[in-house]
Length: 555
Image (cartoon, rainbow, N blue to C red; front, side, top):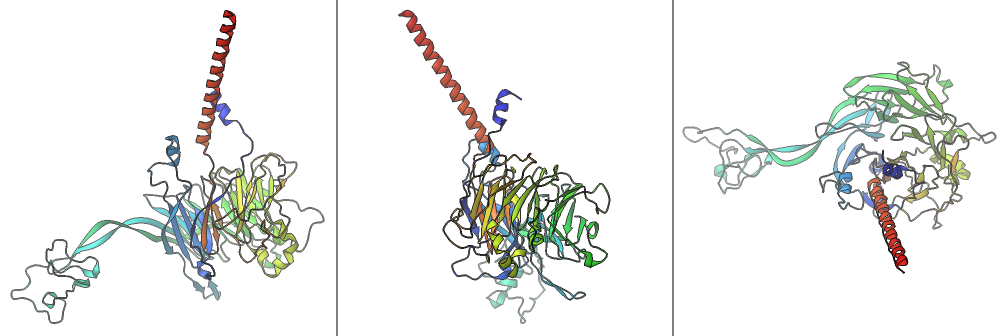
């Protein structure tokens, strides 16, 4: 590594807080419009490239979006930056397709109605230009293949060239020069040509030839979603998580008491790898709330519980992973226990960082960042809505205390995000020294309800002596004095894997918010240009000084 590279890679302190701007909205509601229950979004997921986005709703539908701003140039964003090619202001997506993934069902053995609501969506590896994804409701997981196929049409249809086509696919035969108009199913307004009429009689000597339909492939394409496999009858309780393995061949599904391991190619068999069901259900003290595979190690996965703990397990240790490799939990402060302690400690979602070093967890009140190499406690804790603590009794009465908020990390691992009430979500900086704690709204003006949080010093992630606590709010009103609305909640959001872009769901509306930050390549180029300018200035200064020195000698 040369000296210049060492200069460029040297740490430059925490990044500046991002300024977020509205990008797009899909399914925006008009003023006073009533939201249908089946249209409420229940799952959001980017694929690994960030070029595709999928959402699921309570009506069992999956809607796909694709990125359009990168296709216009035909090259990757990194290559375009190196060519100093102008890039759009932010990623832009367009509606691509939708399909009905799940239908409402009824379990007659248990007299239980199974909702069609999509709980989770996970993208799988692409192959031959097709996208693959997993979707699940409470009981059944489905494996979908989504691919563009060219449309096939019928160009000729029986008996006579002027008579066209069956099924109404085209107007007339492609080799017909007759001006006679044709109708669907080979009909014609001229009765002399209507061979399908009951009065039809064969001409003397019979028909000279029989023309069979000819199917041709057109240049038009249509996106087709086909269910490849159905993974059913493996969970007695509601499925809360699915996660793909880095090997591209297996995935896990988790319910309240069990985690099953599946092979994508085998739908009639799964292996139970975690079972926390006690022999006597009265002895049940905790349930599984979320599970996630490690992003790079195919033998490792983590799952969270309703007691606020995270267990890291290694599939190489045993077939049934009743014992964990590591346990992550925060000791309860003495004297702080109350009726709501266990309820708000329940973890609703966990996510691995891209490099697999850290785990992000979300309970009702906080976000916690864990280092998998340090099980003594979280390395950072972010208070999401501390102003709710005095209102826990009211939230318990209306069941809001059981809301399950998701969390996400940025692709570079420098920031984390999660949702809150009043369609708000919060973004925190988790790099050493960062005090970023931004409150945003899922609307066309995301910074409208920005709450100013006083900066507090933070410690490095490597510190184990004290947990960082940032982002606390002190009131139940926003910066404009508006009261928070606990009936509108932002439960689902996802961070773009390579850019500072967040997709979040507010009821049936999908909002995409972006923040433009200079790319690493442009930062390096700007830094090198600054060094060049500095060297040029230094050279000029030396030339002028030398000329002045020579002038003084002459005098």
